[in-house]
Image 1: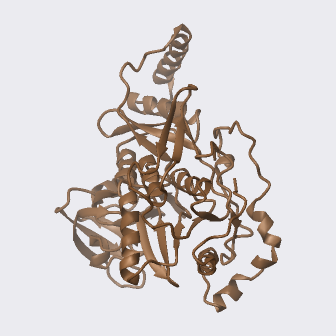
Image 2 (image 1 turned 60 degrees about the vertical axis):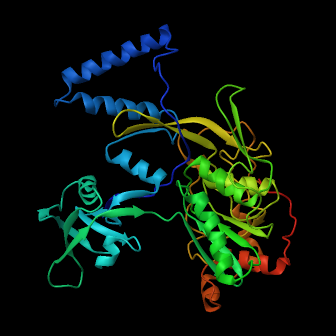
Length: 443
């Protein structure tokens, strides 16, 4: 039974990194002090009367998490390993072995080794069970403890004992830790079209997008017919990198604005602040989105859509239109607090409603797409309410009766199509003659 799962690159919102403000108690009024008195009364009562002794750290951390959980789904407090994981999400690298693991019935199970890392080169495989670290038995222990032991200073060694289903004896691997650099951008060329798959927005995403365009042109020996920017299942990341990626394709104009609690608390970000001109030279761009396209990736999709620079294709995105600020709270601790909402260049908030595609194209190559429940921002408890009316007039359900999308996964597989949305995007660019069709802009 799957009990715990570590996602090294978990879905995060559009993040802004700023120092913590001084004077944390500023603005606390008499009523606030009255409520704090109530809190301290409960705190002291629990500490004095709970059936077991409870230490201060546990009570304070629980109170902090409860306070933030009462606000919205994206505000949180991270310390220790949670802090390390959050830093990995933003920095895009860490010292370790390159393993994604889970815990199954008390055992640490390998989900997958990352390509070209110590774990992959040593031959550790998906499905292996790690039973000992440096000779110490870890089955039944905490997954977080095992992860912390496997991470560490680059150049140091660790020995893993592994049980592999189908083998008679345990296997031993002595690995040397390295800096594990996650690759936020992957690219390939298919049918003369450059495909840029952006899976997260870490510190290198913008620069890697430019490198992807250069790599595509170098492989072809000339410019491609166009580009597919694949943002499907991209849960977001750094706000600055979303701006950088948008700037790669735009020559001018606003990319995004973020607006805080006060009316005059508005920051606007424009094209050509990071990249001069359109790196692609104005070639056709199709942006693929789905229900997992969230936050920072919605900023990119919204900017290219509003500027008529890219044709957004797929199904409605997640709908996370809020910005989280990371506030340092001492050594290995950080507060992740929702501080603003973001708006596309036309002034549209994607909160709840998401980005609606210009061309609604369901993923009919997925056998479960008609029956699998879809989770979006609007389904989360205490999500921020959009002041605009959320328009649900066009949803992916409308495509289920469209004769263009009647083929079954089996029929598509016989034709060699295992990713229908990508196939449709490639066909659209191939037929475009260098200019994508003008359609009514989605929301």
